[in-house]
Structure formats: structure tokens, C-alpha cells
Amino acid sequence: MITTDEQEELRSTVRTLLARTPPSRPAPDAEAGYDETIWRLLADQVGAFGLAVPEEHGGVGCTLAETQVVCEELGRAVATLPYLGSAVLATQALLACGATSTQPSPADSVSGATGALPGLADGSRVGALAWAEGGTWDPAAIRAQVVGGRLTGVKEHVLDGARADLFIVPARTPDGRPAAHGAVSGLVAGAGGGHGADAGGGHGADAGGGLGLYLVDPAAPGVRVESLVTLDRTRPQARVRFDAAPARLIAADGRRVLERLLAVAATALSAEQLGGSDRCLEMTLAYVQVREQFGRPIGSFQAIKHRLADLYVLVESARSVSRDAARALADDAPDLGVRAATAQAYCAEAYAAVAAETIQLHGGIGFTWEHEAHLHFKRAHAAAALFGSPAWHRARLAAHVLDE
Image 1: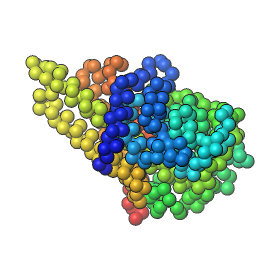
Image 2: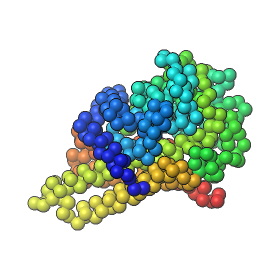
Image 3: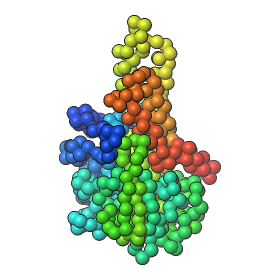
Image 4: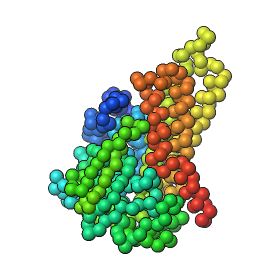
């Protein structure tokens, strides 16, 4: 994908804001949070949280391609912001559900999808998609159930769950039994469902019947949120337990929505990973030109040059696949699922490799708490497990190819 002049201007603006007010770094023993100063700057000066939201619903009216630009820059800065979970996943979940009413909801409760989008778009509220169960984001693994409007189940790895103002929760009804645990999810072909390996048919109830998305108020009775201690303290996660919590249905065709959201999540995360990889290479190149051994910069040694060349190939390849997925997402391409899975599988491993080499080439300073290298290393390894491992995405790709 070739970025437009407007997108490059957006990139420059976000990067300047992040450089002017560097994101906070949580101390080792501090409770993870997010930088509200930068959050408000991005909301008020850039409109970053409503980029892909239609103007009639309080957004800017751009596409997800612009959202990807912001994700790249936040990834470069290892920003402690709930952008991925709220501005991307929660917002896109509501849009995919068709929950676009602008009628206001009561300020102290979540009575439905009405009024939720404007608050997420202007950054005044934080939304969280409570999806994963049993360590997987495969829709077939969902066991949470809604009976009589009451939700019961446990959701894991909920991004910024402890600070969320609303939860969007996929769950089943008693008449829609989940498919066999561990089944490999198909690849969505587009917003309309398409004809991926599983999309739109097969697998009985799991092909859509009985699986819906529900809106839940975090303050409602029966909701318990537990902050988790994770490797990457810059991205807070939570475990959310629902015990007969009141839930409002906002989408009955949950499988279609989740397949779309998985592609959105994989593509957005690949952009973050690309941004982080690019920053690691940038600061490593700068360091090897000033660090001297034997009277000369270490960057002049042939062995170092070879390692830097390998990193460059990884970063540029990640740029190609991530931006290709971003364009497919913005255009709602028929092969969106394939491109998104490819981007996530490659960019996750590339970021982990580049971050590890960054620490090695920085020597002792790369291990210090004050240097940002360790933040990228932790982010890279933690992010590789979000929304499915590279191996899981490759398995989905293989299943898709064999099914054709």
C-alpha cells in the first residue's frame, strides 16, 4: 500500500505529539494504566479515536487505513494507551453490529449500543472487547452463555478491561452449542461474510446460530474484573468474570462479526508490530555509529553490517505485508482474511527477532530499565500471543488453501 499525502501528514502529526510528550513508562511495581495527557491530545487535536467512524456518528469519516497509520506510530512509541482495544476493536465491533444510533444512553449505565459510538469516537469513553476464552480467540472455543438476558462466563486477555466503560462480549445461547474446542477458524472474505473456509456455512450451530454479541455494563451486578500481571506492562489486560450479569444483545450473527473483527485485530496489531520493528532498527543504526570498539564504530565491522542487513529485510518485508493487509481492510477485499492472517503471522515473528537483536547490538545498555529496548522486547513477545499465535494463523492459512 502506498500511503497518501494526507496519511503521511497524519503520521507526522501523531509522531510529533508522541515525541513532544513521551508516553509514560509504568514502573516495575506500578499498576498499569495509560497516559491520559496523550490520550486527550490525540483525541482533541487529531481525532484519532474516531478516524474510521462515520461523521454522522461523531467520527472523522476516514477509513481503517488511517487507523493503521496511528497504530504504527503508537507501536513505535510503545505507547501506554487503550487505542487498540477501544478505538479499534470496540469501535469496529459496534460498527460491525450495526450499532450506530446516536441517541444518548444514561451516563451511568449501558442500556444498549445507542450512544456508545460517539463516546468512543471522541475518546471520552473506553470500550473493551471481552472475547478470548481458554487462551484462544477462535470463535469455536467460546463457552460463555446468555440465558434469559443474563450472561455467565469468564473472558481472558481483555485489553484495558480494568478501565473500560463498556464491555462487548461474544456469547452463546442454550440453543447454539459450541463446536469442538480447538477447531481452526476459517478466514473471512469480507464484511459481508464471504466464502472463507468456515464463513457463511458448515459447522451447524457454530456457523452463526446461537452466537451473538452483547453489551455489558462493567458496573452491573455479576461483573468482576481482575487486573492481570503481564509481561508487557504497557498494555494492561484483565480477566472478566460474568455471573448472571445483565446483557443486551446487539448482534445475533456473531460468527460473521467475529471473523471480521479477527481480521481487523490482526491487521491493526501487525501495524503496531511494524512500527515497533522500525523504531528498533532506527535506534540500533544510530547506536552502532557512535559506539566504538578498537578505535572504530562497531557499525563498521562486517559482522554487524550483516546482522543489520538481515534486520532491514525483516522490517521492510513486515512493512509490505502489514500495509497490504491495511489496504485490503480499507477496501474490504475478498481475500481480507488471508492477507490479515499473513500479516499477523509474519510481523509477530519479525518484531520479536528485531527486538531481540536490538538488545544484543546495544550490549549492556539494552538490558537497563531506563532504555526503551526492553520495552520493545516485552511488547514483541506479548503481542505475538494476542489474537492467535503465528503458528495458529499459519494453520488457518493452510486450512484455507487445502479447502479451496
